[in-house]
Length: 178
Length: 69
Image (tube, rainbow over all chains, first blue to last red; front, side):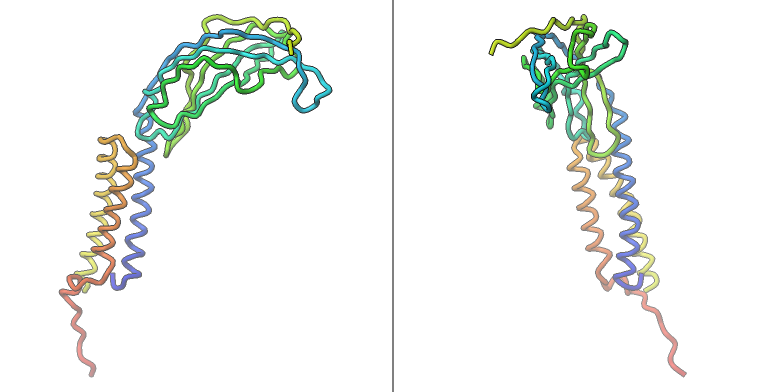
């Protein structure tokens, strides 16, 4: 066209369409990468103690402390469109009435392929507590390592990488030594 | 001038569409989103240098106005 403004108008209109098509293609390309990494998860110890609730220090409740042994190789999940991985360890158990509970007790953000090998023996980051305040009415629980792939452009996707092989009973609560 | 306008329009269309394909393919091959975005940005800058300023090549066939009566 006849002036700079007209050319800028024309070029920028097509340019924005091309950018959207490019980003859409990048988002769609995520579906080509199907990785399903598996790892090992073992529970070293699970102890339940009497303690005070965090919000109301006059109320008693039971807190579970988990030490776990985790090794997983999550490098296949890193493709060109992966921005970071959110990895979290969940405790899944059912109460005696049949209500299913899932509690996230540990998580980690993995930002690069080099950090994606996870080999830790750690204790939980967050409190493992039941809504009723006590673990006495609770059946044995399983622990699972799940991940959430966050892309640069596209849809979030979830997956499970490791699971304990057998269910683990919650022991009776005891008073802490200190 | 009209021929120049059509040339500018064609250049814009061809360059933008090929740079979309090119940057996607190159980035996919090298597995880096950075490369995709930077090739696309480079193509955009090059395109704007060619098309936006009023170069004389766009005025090779100027309009001949008829004289005032």
